[in-house]
Length: 496
Length: 37
Image 1 (cartoon, helix red, strand yellow):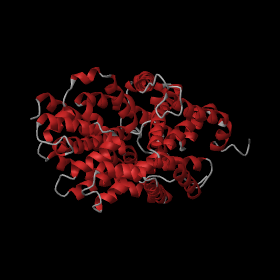
Image 2: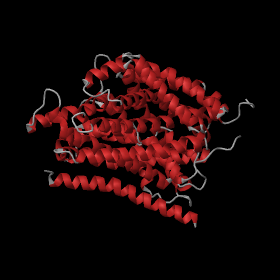
Image 3: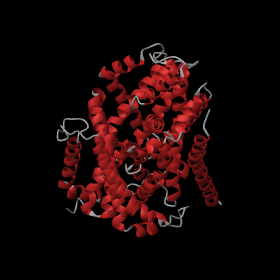
Image 4: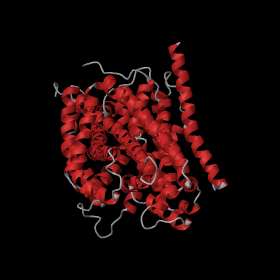
C-alpha cells in the first residue's frame, strides 16, 4: 500500500478543515437566519456548537486518524463488516450534496466575473438572476468550470494541491469578510442592523422554527457529520491533536459566520430604504424593506438583494466583486473537500488518486447537470441530502455509542498527544443529547414541511415521500452490496 | 441607537466565539512551540 500523504503542520490541517467548514451557508444562510430571529437565535446557536458540532467533529477526527480511510473504510474497520453501509450512506449523502454544490460554486464564480467586469451595473438584478438560472447552458458551464478548478487542485495531492490552495483561499476569504464588515459597519444607519442582528426578540423564543433553524445551522454549517473532517484526518500527522483542533474548527467556523453577518445585516439595514418601490427614508418603511430583503431566501439574498444594495454605494463594482469572490472562495474550498472525500472513497477501493479523480470529476459533472438546469431539482436535492446529513451525524454518534461513550473518550480523545482533556460532559452529549437532537431535527423538519394532501407523492420536491424514496433506495442498495463493499475496502477481495 | 440589552448579547456572543477562537489558537500556538523545543 502506498504511503499516505500528510499535511505538513497543524496549521495546514486547520486551514483545510476550516476551508471545508466555511462555505456558502456561512455567508448567505447564517446572516439571513440571524437577521430573522435576532439575538435569541444566536444564544442557542452558540450552545449547540458544544451540544452537537464539536463532539461529532471529535468523533470524525478520531475515526479518520485511527483507520486512515474515508468514511466507508472507517466504518468498516471501526465498527465491523455489518456496519459498512453506514459509511456508504455518509459518503453518498455528501456526494449528493456535492453534485449541486458545484452548481452553487459556479453561480458565485459567474457573479464574481460579472461584478468585476461591470456587467452587474445598472441591471435589474431580479431579471438578471432569473435569466441566468433559466438559461440552462450558463449555469452548466460554470458548474463544469468549478469542477475543473477543484479537480486541478486535488490532482496535485494533499501537500501541493489541497494544502497550498487553502493557504491562499481561507486567509483571502477572511480578509475579504473583514474588509466587507468594516465597510458595512461604517455606513450611515448600520446600527439599526446591529440592533436587529443582536436584539433580544422574546417572541422568537416561542417559535419552534427558530429552535429548528438554530440547531440545523449548527448541524450543517460546521461540517460535523458530513465525513469531510474524517477525510482530512486521514492525512493528519500521527502526533496530531484531535480535541483542540475540533474546538478550533467549531469556533473558527462560527466566528466566520458572525463576520459574514456583520457584512450583510448592517448593510441591508443601512441601504434597504434605497431599493425598489418601498424606498424612502421613513423609519417603518425602511425597516420593512430590510426585513423583506433578509427574508428573500438564500439565493434571493445572495444574488439579488446584495448586488442591488451594494450598487447604491460608491465603488460598488469593487465591493460587489469582493462579496462574490468571498462567496466563491468559501464555496470552492468546501467543494474541494467534498471531491476529496469522493476521491478518497475510490482510493480506499484500490484506485490511485490520478485515476480516481477523473472518475469523480466526470460523475460530478454529469450528475450536477440536472441541478444546474432546474431550480426545482436543485431545491429537492438540497432538501433530501441536507436532511440526510442528520442521519449521517447520527451514524457517527452511533459509532461512539456502540464503542461505549466513556471508552471512546478515554481511548481516542484523552490521549497524550491531545491538548485538551475531554471531561464527562462528552458522555452525556454524545450518549443523550445528540440522539435526541437528531430525532427532534428530523421530526421538526418533516412537521414544518408537512403537506397533508401530497406527503406521499415522491415527485413533490419537499415531500416526506421524496426523502424516504431516495434514502431508502440508497440504503437498500448499500445493504445488498454491503459484503462486496466491505471486502474491497478492507483489502479482502482476493480472499473472497 | 443600540439598546443596552442588545449590547450585552453582542458582547456575549462575539466574546464567546471570537474569544473562544483566540483562546484555542493561543493553546495551539503554545503546544506547537513546546513540540518544537
